[in-house]
Image (cartoon, one colour):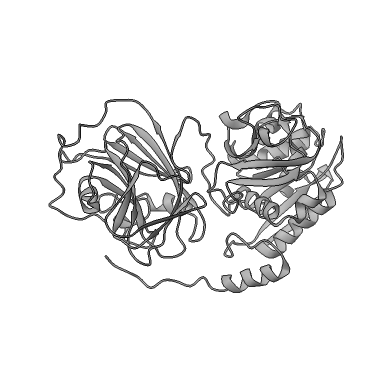
Length: 458
């Protein structure tokens, strides 16, 4: 297998060191092209005393991460021509009716033209009579208990706003109950554990942070940010930065609604088996590859028609893959010969690059390049298997559509992740599956086991 020299990330290391000395959250990606953000904090109801601290926090983030910030409470900034200057608009603790009809129309056109929205805390307590805004923010405020400490459960750990967080994020804030549950229209990133505080009214599924694509644009909302202290917390500031970067289109994420998935891995490797040399470390519900060439496969059962989702990250020019449709085997070469590998390696040949069906079908490289986050950031795969059709989605964008016509193979079978070799350091998180129904795979030992001339697809 080819190895290419690993590229250096320019001045990124120096930037990280400088920001650490300044006490600022480090940038998720030091290579962002510059952009402009409008912070809007007009209030027509309750006014949070944290607004100045919030504005300053966004200014600090902008100075450290390559975006300029304009802060205003003047709705006259909401014109078509003026909004076109900004990649993202942050509604920072707005309340009540803050835009007139013409301003609403301009903002709606801005989102429809691909603009980004970030809602912070009482942005959900804003514009109750404007249906477009209600759909954009995702849910309206209903009530809240007293400020107190609570556990935030991090559900979506590939998004730039949450990738840095532990599975349970414990902090103090004012915890909103919402009138509706946004899960049916948005990708929920964090939820509140109502058993950890008093006054929650949404039950076991209490969304707190979410993202969504809407009307041509991007929306991110966080329920945090009530108090001045929030904006001094490094983790919350990094959370806010990730939301801004997503809204501005500087990082990609799969923000499609998600329900009905069963966890295969989220910290526990029960049901998984290692085949071949090397393996994976398991820490903070994250698997990190080492050595190889081997494979960690879900040996507990096989699957036929399903949506398999997982998150992955590589630090540089690394190599791995997700293998589907193979019969039981302790030999990783057998799995590669009798199944199909969806490759992870953005620098290889087109039919052996990220999103390819390895050595069989290249991805739509333009779509892949537009959807791919760079080394150091998390990416999200969905592998959708329907019969002998395999569709590959990267960060919510379809990048490959392959149909198996090889009679010696089938897409039904086991699934696994590859540890390719020393120096190929790829991490995985949050492996989950949703079965779509259909016939089960053949009984082990009765199906075909012949590969493509014994060729090893790595």
